[in-house]
Image 1 (cartoon, helix red, strand yellow):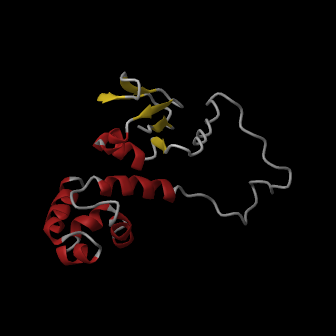
Image 2: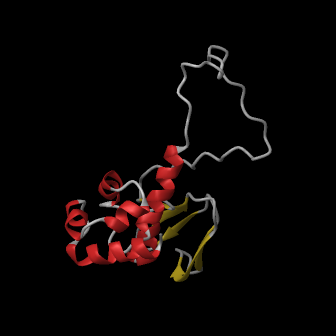
Image 3: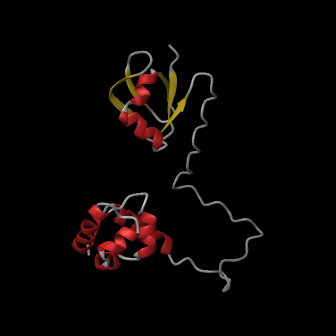
Length: 164
């Protein structure tokens, strides 16, 4: 039997109850660990979900090992010096960051917690509604046009009103 190699590429320890590695021991992967597993283990729903999420990497027999993810610099390390050819930050012509991307990420996460708004339709919903009030005022037809299924459109409006 040719075993597949499973590698934990996340910074967290992963333990899978009820699953065994190639040597018959419980499947526990510390960050960077690679263990042989039976091909049937790959069909387990938790393993499949972690592979899709990029937490685990699979190496088929005969393939090269995956490269580990770069480790971030410690929080207490000093920031790197900017390159010498970078213009000074006090230039008036340079656009200032207003934090709108952070706001958009927060709004995206908030909208994703609504029933019926998924990764597939969240961008269209964000394009149509820039805040929670607009979402609460939306008609079901407009939500359907933005990609929300008809069966969830009413619940999305109710959810938005509850979360104002």
